[in-house]
Structures are given as structure tokens and as C-alpha cells.
Image (cartoon, rainbow, N blue to C red; front, side, top):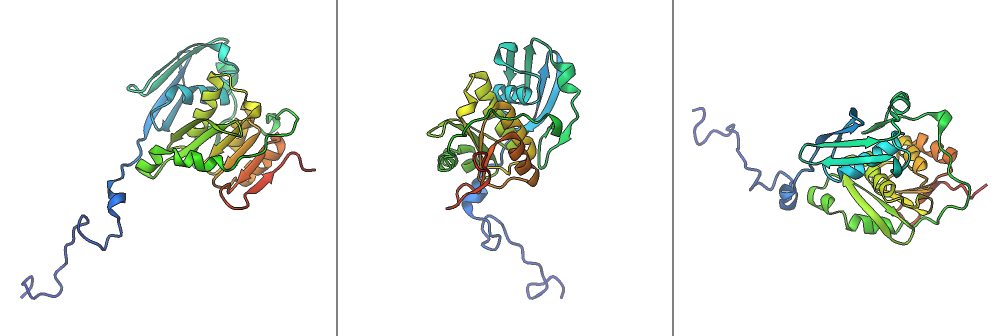
Length: 259
């Protein structure tokens, strides 16, 4: 008899909440997924960008993105900066209007997430001098404070350090966005970037090196590794680049002080 109690081919129905065969731990089942939303950045009445990001710290995100992309050169240019998390929008008014120059640069799609404008012929060069000694240990502090990562398990962190302490820390689903938030925080507060270090959990791409060099950040410390083009950009911009920073022996890909 098909389908009877003694039928050995009848499918066995299990329930994930009680089955031990799923491999999903109770803690993992209770974790929340990270929030992702489209956010629009308007510059002098025109849409400059639409970003998929963690929809918080939007003022820092917009300031960092506009500065890194050449729409803003200094905080004095800002007339108004209004961020509305509920509307998922940031409106910026600035003078002078740099729309034509900034928006005409060729766009380069970055690896993983994000997009920016990168020109090999116009890479910024950091001011000559001895870069600060990288403090890789602060990466542990940044990770310990990553509340959103502990809540969701799927988010990036970035921080700005003066070499002794963490000055600011941001989280975002996109590693580029987290870096832009850090740069935006420093830009709005006129942080002395020349004496700082950027910490990041993400893979370091060439675009990220361009952004930190434009800000004047001389040291980039990563939990992960850089791409080959990022290593080349570190050499061209004079950035001290460190990967696998929590290993007993981190990898220094470029040290401007070495011959």
C-alpha cells in the first residue's frame, strides 16, 4: 500500500527549529540581517549619486562621498547639508558649484561594491615626510566596538585613528561607504588627516587608496588584503599600506620610508 504507515519511501518531514541536522545554531537563527537601502545624494539641486548603503550617518556619508569625488574641496564651501534618514536622502548646497568638473570625470566601477572616478594620470601624492608608525592593535578595538556586526554578522567597519586612539568609527554594508563615512567625519571637523591612520575590515581596492590619498591619510591598515592595483596606487601616492593586520606579522605592502 502506497502512503501507508509502513511505507519506507515516505518522505521524512523535519522542522528547522527543532532539527539538529540543519547545522544552524540557535544564536545564528536569532541574528538579524543588516539593513540595506538606496540613499540619494543631491548636490545643488541635481542628483549626484544613488548609493546602496546602511541608511544611517548620512551626513558623514554624503560629505565623504562628495569630497572624495571632487564636488567639495573644503568645509567652507558648504552652505547647507541636510540629511533625512526617513526619506533616504541628503541635500547639499555648496559654492562654488563644481558639478561640471566633478561629474565629467570618467567613472570606474570598483570591485565588489561602489564606484568612483580614478585617473592614473592625476593620482594625488601625499606630502613628503615620515608616515606615522602603524598601530595595528587598534583594529582589535574597532572590532570589539562593532555592535552592528555582532547583531547581524554581515557588515564592514572603518575607523580613523591618530595612532594612539580611535577618533571615529562607522559601520556599513559596503566597505567603500564605511570609508566615506570616516572621511566625511574628518572633513566636516577639519581633522588633521596627515597625522591619522585608516582602519578597515574590508579588502583594500585601488579606489579606496585614491580616496584616502585625496584626504591626505598616510597610513591604511586592513584586516584583509589589498588588490594588486591598490598596492601600485599605494606606491604612487606614498601611502603606507598594511594588510592582514591582526596576524603576528602583518604584511607591509608599501613603506615609503624604505628605499
